[in-house]
Length: 340
Ligand SMILES: NC(=O)c1ccc[n+]([C@@H]2O[C@H](COP(=O)([O-])OP(=O)(O)OC[C@H]3O[C@@H](n4cnc5c(N)ncnc54)[C@H](OP(=O)(O)O)[C@@H]3O)[C@@H](O)[C@H]2O)c1
Image (cartoon, rainbow, N blue to C red; front, side, top):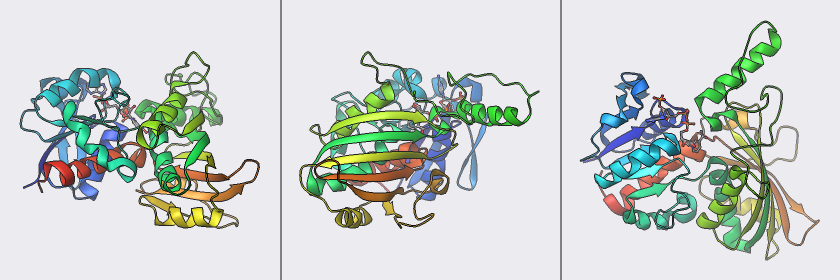
């Protein structure tokens, strides 16, 4: 006996990837429903070898469904997650709405799978921000060995992190550069994204940082350790899929770069590609469609006591969203619901 699974936001970047990953990982599904807004009623989406017709979430009855993977943005989540949860369906949510709620576990299974048992307070589990997810997979095993004091991270985030409209914006702007008569309208970003980089993701906060940067700080503390200090600069780059991060880490104890490389090689969810030669590192284009978070350029930082630098790349639609959500569903199944 398997699970009755709902994918909400099935027509979006993350929702489509959730359907792909449920099929790829052979999640024990007895029945599956694809939901989106009324705009998408009847839109066909793929689930393995089958095609599903999308239904309107507003008309959907969650009673009797086991797990709902949500990727519909915070506003719609605010309306529908409590309805699903009240009907007895466990919601695994990709939006930021519940991430900082003390009654909702925020989970990256490689780091804090044991937090799953906290789901029952609200019947909701939160999935972290894409840039946090890939970073904490790398930080956790290093923290367990040498205690991280401080992290300085700069991100290079792809446009797919801003939804399907952003992919079109990069595509249309890029074409318009070569065809000056083509017109394009900026809808998602405040400056051109084609052949440019934008040091601004999400809204500005009072202290001058952006919400995306704040999320990396708050979520790392909730998932790994509240004692870790994080300072982040989040930047959008003209890449379709795959987020990259330059991460500088300061530890309590000395950690040699070779030992760090060995620890990361053994760590779950990580693939180390770190040859000190031309092309001996991973770029975002190469990580698309992969489950792993890739680590390259591991090297000592001798400008601080016990410092290390590394380069971290992952498919933001997978580890940063859909894969992590499915891994949470797998953990929930294995530890709590025990079907399948
Ligand atoms: N992309 C990433 O890397 C990433 C990473 C982590 C978290 N997330 C989060 O995941 C969520 C989805 O992101 P995305 O990139 O997949 O966005 P997207 O490509 O723009 O897709 C949005 C999805 O939400 C649905 N939706 C929007 N408003 C709705 C409503 N009122 N009722 C029902 N469905 C509604 C859309 O349905 P229609 O097609 O019918 O409009 C579509 O299926 C967001 O909360 C985002 O913050 C994204």
